[in-house]
Length: 419
Ligand code: CUA
Image (tube, rainbow, N blue to C red; front, side, top):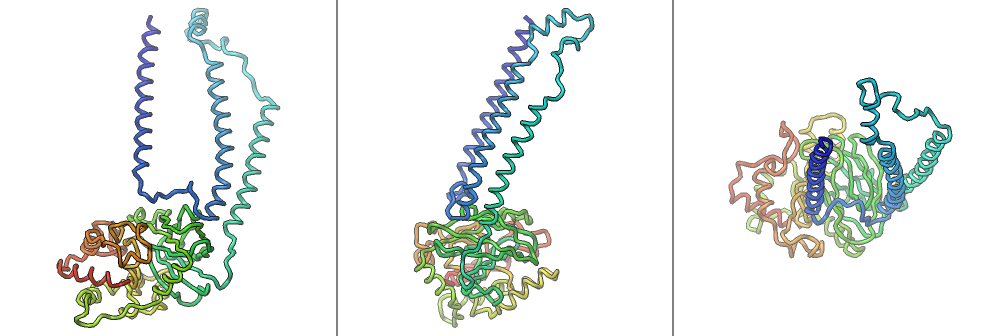
């Protein structure tokens, strides 16, 4: 009687708990579906390197699943098969002289060691792991293989708190100043391997565009080679994947992959410096605001006259342990020469245009896109409110409480001339 009631109560509690767990699991699954349209998706590879990784991952996952069910199945079988049944336990307790519910003499014979079993569960995993490690080593070697020619495009990737800079070397020579410097959007030609040289200006970051390749750390004072390649044009999301300070989660990026003709057009456009505006020209007032407030950190080629060499020196300074300020004065904030040609800003956490970039050809967003004025102005007004800075305020964009709304409007008008 007592036993049955206890079992009923225990059973009720079990089912209530199970229901809770299932509801929590369901909610978690539903929440993951709320992710952005561009998830950090490792499962739908979009390039040969990501393919290489998944060609290794899925077979290993298959083996792991088989092992999981074999081991868990064996455990569950043992537990069920050899559990102490209530009736047996009661009989044993009734028989026993001692107070023990289930005395020593009632245990089954204890077995110590079984040579054949021991050999089996040592040799089988050893073979499995050896086979997996061989395939893993082959994949690692192939992932690092550079098939691009010496004089093909190379990009230096510079991580910093909390955005990515991309320095393009069109002739593949990374020892000379870059031809193009841009931020947050790694524009690249389709079906062409793009070798990268990844480094950092401050702390350790990690470069990761999961649909194109795995992760590679960005370490100050070091250069790590990496490659990416995409099979189809499109916009592929990336994210810093090494915790690097308060706004680590807001250190995103995109690879923007273009057809060869569009890629050529983009390169030609980016090679052109901005022309300084003259009094009376649309945007001139904003240019004045820009020069007075933003040009300490942001470069507009042709307007702020900061030498790209200085920029690179600033990076070396930082790696050499010099102050944060020296790197900032050297122009260590996103280069804004062609800001309006990009689709995102602030470490790619905001869209620059209302109608998402992919509905408009990438090269036309600056002309046809509807400016996301709300986020852009809020960002200029009080960036730390949108994206936390370090406590000392030295990293990340500062707030500009001194700017009037009129000045902000003028500044935005100017920024939108930077195509
Ligand atoms: Cu940069 Cu995390």
